[in-house]
Structure formats: C-alpha cells, structure tokens
Amino acid sequence: MIHIAIMGLGTVGTGVAKVIAENAEPIRRKLGEELQVKTVLVRHFKETPYRQLMTDDFAEIENDPEIRVVVETIGGVDAAYEYTKRALIAGKHVVTANKQLVAEHGCELLQLARKKQVSYLFEASVGGGIPVLHPLTQCLAANRIDEIYGILNGTTNYILTRMVQAGASFQDALAEAQEKGYAEADPTADVEGIDAGRKICILADLAYGHQVDPAQVPMDGISGISLKDVRIAERAGYRMKLLGRALRLPDGRRTAYVAPHLIPVSNPMSGVQDVFNAVMVRGNATGEVMFYGKGAGELPTASACVSDVIEVLQASPQRDEIGWEADTEGFVKPDVLSSRFYFRMLGSLSEAVSAFGSVEVLSENGETAFLTDAITGEQARTFSETLPVQACFRVLA
Image 1 (tube, rainbow, N blue to C red):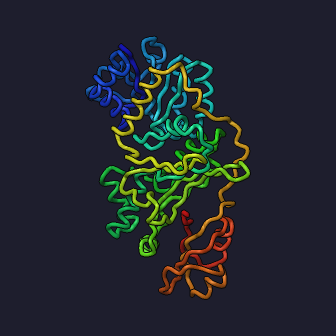
Image 2 (image 1 turned 180 degrees about the vertical axis):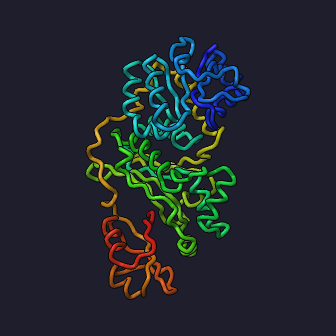
Image 3 (image 1 turned 90 degrees about the vertical axis):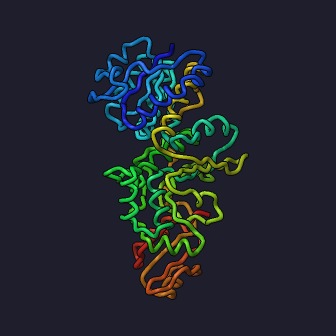
C-alpha cells in the first residue's frame, strides 16, 4: 500500500481523490501496489465522503513516515509555499497544480527538492489535463525552443467564443461564464491575463532554462475588447484570442507577454473554442507542435496531478531535466518584437495613411480600422498615445 496526502479539498483536491478511487485498478497495475489517500489537510471540517481522512494540522502529514507524496491543491502562495517547503524538507515528493506558486517560487522549490533527493512536479499547473510540460522537457529535449504561444485560459477563450458565435458583449459573455461556473465571482485573474501570464512564465522557465519573473511580464487581458473589434476581425478572416507568448530572440535573449491577438483563420489556434486550451511549441528541429485539450476542470486537472504522482513513485528519486536557473538576465520587454498591428481609430483613412504609410483597410464608418505593416510594439504604443486610437492589438503571423 502506498499512502499519499492531499492539501486542500476544493475542486482539484476532490478530483484527485476521485481519480484515485475510480481508477484504482489501472493505477495499481502501473505501480504494483494500491495507491491510497491517507490524509487530507483542510481549513474547515465538513461532511464529505473524505471526512474521516481530514486534519487541520499539517504536522500530521509532515511527520507521517508512511506518506510518500503530498499533492498540493491549496492555491496561492502563503500556506501552500510554507507547507510545500516543509514537505520537501521532510523528504516527501510534492505534486501541485498551483501555477502561481510555481511561477513565483518554482526555482527555489526545485532546488530544495534536488537537495532532498525528491521530486517537485507540476504538470497540472499549465493546461490542466493537457500533457505539455513533460513533452517540452523530454520529448522535445533535442530541440532549441524558439517560440511557445497558446490559449492558456479557458475562461477568456469561452468569453471570446461567445462574443463571436452569439454576438454577446464582453460583460454579457462574462456573466454567462460565471453562471456556468467557468469564471469566478472575481474574474480578475482570468480576464486581465494574470492566470495566462503565470502559465507562460512556467513554460518559458522550462523552455529557456532561466527564471522569468512574472512581475516583469506584461499581462494584458480581454476586458478592453469590444464586440465591434471582434466583428471587424471576423469579417477580415481573423479570430480574436488571448495568447501567452514566449520567444527566444536571435541574440539569445528572451521575452514573454500576454495580450489579445488577431489570429488568421488558417491557423489551427483560431479554431480552439469554448473552454479548451491549446499550446504551440516551435522547435528548430520539429517545427510547430500543437497540444490541445481541456485546460481546466476538476477531473482533467486531477488527472495530470495523479499522473505526476505515479511518475514520482515509478521513477528515480527525481527528474533532473525539470528546473531552471534563478538568473533573470537576458529578459527583455516585448516592445522590441515586430509584427503587424490592428488599429481602430477615430478619423479618416487619409489620417491613417499619413501616420502609418501603407495600411490594409478593414472598415470605414466614422472610424477607420486597419492593419499595419510590421512595426515594433514600441512604435505601436507611440502611435496609440499620439493618435485618437480606440483599439490596438497585435496580429499573429
């Protein structure tokens, strides 16, 4: 019998317990022993099928020699950070879905895990049930990763899908997402790009081997997108999507950001709808490889957590290829990147041409919507500050 503990019994923690119970036999075949949840750490006791396993004292987990793996599903960086450190110091493997903790403290926690000869794994922190971190560090290990971009937040993708398919405004689509349980009562982390930002930081950390500080990464969300821009983009053969992007520049420096983009309908990413996520990885040997699936939810995320549990129990004491250096040198703001931009501004076409030179006109109706030739983000920002610009978004090539 192999015993584990779960910290937190919210959506993901409950899902982990369910997956272990419902898939007990295939898990037993893989491990050669039964896997069982022995202890569940909670803040408040409540009546659930796991009531007899609950404790509010982390020391019971920390000091129990039978517990080999701790699954952290608390969220945030306060209690989760303290308990994760203590579990690693106690010689226990830790598995997590906590993207904020990994993005902000992953480098330190991985170093501690190595020191204690245990593993700290976090496949579920990016893409929920989509296996992307493992392929990135193992299956694509022979590649130089030049770019990663993707739809990393299901809530925002659902909102943008409803704006396209139903003609809903941002506020109406958000209210619908909240009614369906796809968005929190306070949706800030989702709609302002913070959740996607933490995930692209983790992807960049693993791809480039250096810490990407979330505080340095520009994160723009979708709250400023109007239905007018969604419709103009759709008529022109583009879809509006919130993307997280990380790129290796020709000189070896790195950048990352989150922002809405116009994506050509010919790009498979444009067809990712509703709460689904997708991640595109471009390697110098493989070209583009796309990962697609449900990026959140109780069982998809729990599936990734339990897979990590099985891996740490099957593998050698630790995964040496998982990790990155604390050095943040070489990170630059994405203003240096050149791309086409979408603008919508008050005024006539002649004013747009005078400011930008050659443009591709998408709409003229008291306002002018157009696509520019390739310009840098810095140039786009300057134009936005000096002209009566109503909207400005990058175009994905």
